[in-house]
Image 1 (tube, rainbow, N blue to C red):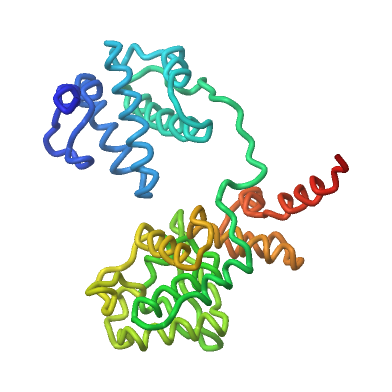
Image 2 (image 1 turned 180 degrees about the vertical axis):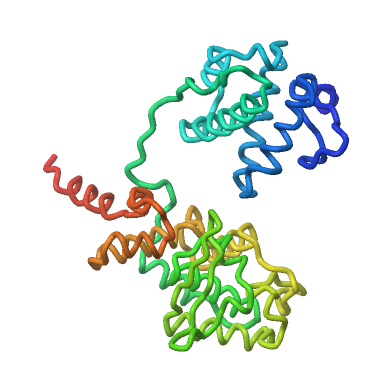
Length: 326
């Protein structure tokens, strides 16, 4: 398998992505195609997660095309449609792959490698999400999770502060991991946390009293108040979790930590750090907070996305089912 993969790829000197490895179909199409590859993946896409997802989608499709011995310039909409007919996976996954393939072919058209975008007219199955797929965690379960953390090591203080930040700011795990010491600051009236969110958004979220206490106690336990202000706020643990390193926690570290704490608290293991965003949104909406305010807290540019985090409809549906008289 590895040998077959190596035969299907060539190395282009001076290219910057995936160790300078470019699919053979792109390499064979000439300098303009190689330029478009480098431009799209290294110049156009700035979000690392999007880049990896689109890179995987385009590589998978080009590999599939290569096995059918079709040149890049001879790819047709029918061939693209056939690929998605044969592609396993959910409809949202297919839509993500189609988005990446379509965007890449747009660049190939702009660079005059192709005359038309063969993926432009291709459609996948319809998909309409009324409710998000993020596993649910309730307010009571969130309280139990926080209360279950015994404060014996510095990692315990850190974990409580991280989980409380996820709950009380509704921030994404990636944004929490990017926090620096300077991002926990007093603005003259209150403490705030300054987050760098998706899409280059920067937002300041007020810190409520209990979260402020958790963060301050964590800083004291970790003895990092006097560290450089550009250094990480939440750090990975080392030495049997009795000390912290200088490396920032990333979203994977935070997810693993949350899973450990869920297991210790005998709570559903399907829950993820993203579940706290849904919990916060549903709780606020149940209290009558305006959708626009919840939308701003979650950092959404479209209220339709915020509605996916609203689990009130699911709760109503359960009530209706319970009333069936059979």
